[in-house]
Amino acid sequence: MAASTILSRKMIKLLSPTPPSLRQHNLSLMDCINLPQYSPVAFLYPKPENYNKNQISQILENSLSKVLSSYYPFAGRIKDNNTYVDCDDTGAEYLNVKINCSMSEILNNSSNDVADVVFQQDLPWCSTLNRSPLVVQLSHFDCGGIAVSACMSHKIADGYSLAKFINDWATTARHVDFKPSPQFNASTFFPLMDGVPNIMSINASPESQRYVSRIYNFSSSNLRRLKNSITGIQNPTRVEVATSLIHKCGATASMENLGLFKPSLMSHVINLRPLIPLDTIGNATCVYSTIAMTENEIKLSNYIAQLQKVKQQVRNELKNLDMNQIVPYALGKMKGVVDMMEKDIFDIYVSSSTCNFGLYSKNNFGWGRPIKVTCTKYPMKKSVMLYDDPSEEGIDVLITLPEDEMLIFQKDKELLEFASPIAGTIK
Image 1 (spheres, one colour):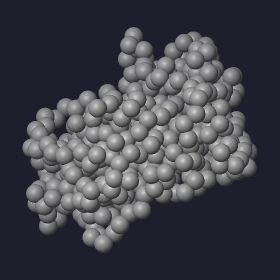
Image 2 (cartoon, rainbow, N blue to C red; image 1 turned 30 degrees about the horizontal axis):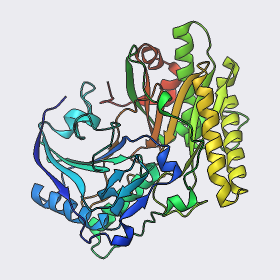
Image 3 (tube, rainbow, N blue to C red; image 1 turned 135 degrees about the vertical axis):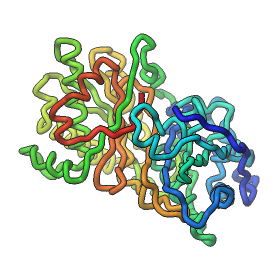
Image 4 (cartoon, rainbow, N blue to C red; image 1 turned 90 degrees about the horizontal axis):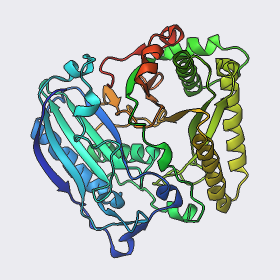
């Protein structure tokens, strides 16, 4: 991995102090059931024209200070057994770092991982307890290219909320008069209640197994070809076909490794917005699952049919609920998934998607859109993370598997027919 040097570290304070009436931000039930860990995302940009290093950092610091006045819980501290945020204006942690190589050297070298060097060491997916909910890093490469990364506590923000925050931060950097309007009222929609399922037991990978990650790109043209190759399915989405192919190839690798087919369960996440307002910040998702009990059920047409059916069923059921019924429904769905995971009869896959969040098109801080958006591997047993590629029509997939299964997975001919491995993937 390329060496890095911290040039400076500081706390970015709010431009406008938080009023006393907003000092305590109560976490919602959806917040409380999420793990206290940092969710990472990084944006890589070519050398900004007409800006030196000090100007770049000053633009980011000033705009971050301003946007935090609207996103004030991100500059506080999580308190009282993770039930509320003390919005004490402590600030967000900000690092200015020099990386001793060019950006292209990292992006094009499979032995180096850009997703590690642009984050503070050992921070992604680690505990956020007793730390700033938000940690930002500006990284300067020798070539003049830069990376802007953010690690956000999953206790107070889901992927949608993190994406909206970065979007608003970038807009603030470009437009001095812009004022974002996030609403930190998720607890009014999702109040605390008893009977919360414990998801801690499914989080960590067994120490006896080594897990590795790879990134694959599904170009827009390959996604169209993949869709056209599947018969009997009406209008599958790009996320549905990419997820289903990754699942099939993962299950096939597992079967070859074990010598027999093991039933699989894949969890999926649905955004509860716009059932609640789109500007609601926090965790607002519902988990559901698809199951393949036989080898026949992992075939693309069969699996996509099930995925579409289950997803539409969840959407229809949610649409017909009163607001006070959403929390018990979402809890029931999560408890059902967790209970099945704990039975130890399934191969478990955890999937999530940030596609259509505008991570490329909306994150221009003044020096153009990013050329690459990336993450670090998720420390679940088997995970699939989907996000837009630079065209925002294709998909990049970050998949984590046991090392012995990955050796089989990455040689799958059907996978390689539609997806290309990306250099610089994660070890």
